[in-house]
Amino acid sequence: MFHRVLPYKDVIDNMLKSNSDSIQLMLSTGEWQQLQHVKDFLKAFFDATVKLSCSYTPSAHELLQHLFAISKVYRDIRELENRDETLAPIVKAMTTKFLKYWDDVPLVTIIANCLDPHWKVKYTVKMMQKYKENLGLPAQNEEGRVNYALETMFNLYNSRINVARPASTRSSAGSGSHHGLLDDLRDEDDLDENASMNELKSYNLGMVEKHPVDILDYWKRHSSASPTLAMMARDIFAVPVSTVPSESCFSSANRILTDKRSKLGPNIFEKLVCMKDWIDAENRTQHFVPGETSSCVETQGSGTATEAESDDEEYDPKDTELWYLRNNY
Image (tube, rainbow, N blue to C red; front, side, top):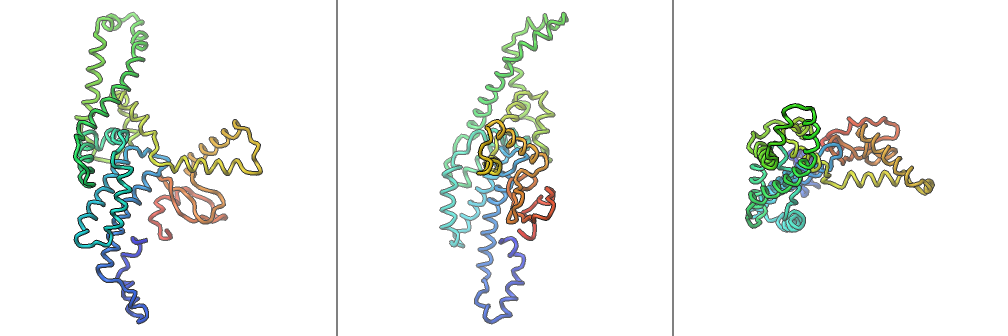
């Protein structure tokens, strides 16, 4: 609401000045500035909610970045307290609540950010250090913590690949070529260890991506050069950050199993829920509730929206993209 009002500050002031009965409702310059601060403060939370509630794109690698953006807002508001103490009680309460959940950032979130080619380990460590500084948290050995967590998970996944490697080696050696003899003479332990270290080091020492990339497509293209990291990315990016998609699935199930359809067997019920979700996912309509006129829930890359839909209008998923920028929101 604030981002709609602030551009019309002069118009609102002139309108209130023209009416003697409304002149007392005029806001001072300081009060308009307070509204601007509130708008900037809430924008970080709004952007995080939109991006992290997505259903069709991975969001695990974006959580730490949004937490960092929120920490910068807390830092800026704290610096303004010397000049404006209006928001101090509110911000203090919100900071306490925020730190209750995000004082210790989950390691899986940190590893997911490391697997983002725009950040890798180097800039993930810097972001963690700034994150702690913005929130006034005690400094820790973030570099050692991040490297230890990444290497531990990497070694775990690499061991899975090594278990399956001898079978493929034997199958290729059975062709009668000289490669089979070479494989028998190699020190497999040293080979695997060197290959693993080269894979992890080459990724961390490589250039970071400076242009937007599809992170799933990135790891698909690099799966041959970095099979262990690609396997880690496949599993980690499948973890949803928000519970919005799963809660929406339960809501959809409530519309299938009703009082008048209460005798569906578990197998039929499971097939109906899965089939509906797959069809809705293909059409990007997983959060659209047919017949709802108050609000429909959908956006491209996001699991939340608030756009009114008429029963007589044909639903087009593309119409709900960037719903939060629409005039009627």
